[in-house]
Amino acid sequence: FAAHVNPHTVYYRMAIDQMGLIAMLSKQRLDYLIGFPAEAMYWNQLHPENPIISVPLAETQGTYAQGRMACSKNAWGREVIRQINQLLLKHRLEASYIAATTLPLVPAEQRPQYLKDYQRIVGADHWSNAE
Image 1 (cartoon, one colour):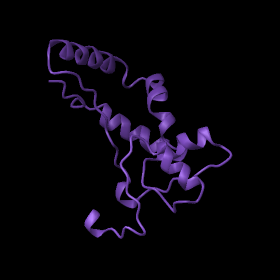
Image 2: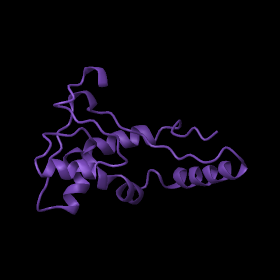
Image 3: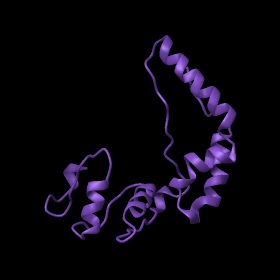
């Protein structure tokens, strides 16, 4: 990436979150950012007086970033993961779980497709690689 960047026109920074960069965007110090739609939604909840928009990239349509839980590779860690998996197996497809954990991060216009994809991906038997 760095070999192809003009240092006078591209600002590249690794960050834990994008709130600092989004603040710069809202002050028109940046033209655009590449991030997740949920980051823009979160910003807009905190700053409704100065909202930003999220424009999907064609290359990312229908793809999702899947998260994982991880623990120490010892007996304690395996037990924690076993308990988490037990809870997820029981609740992962419940409407209340989905509404509380994922829907707040999905733009309203994308929710119908997201819910179909969620059922297909999370509802599959291979969703966990706990060992």
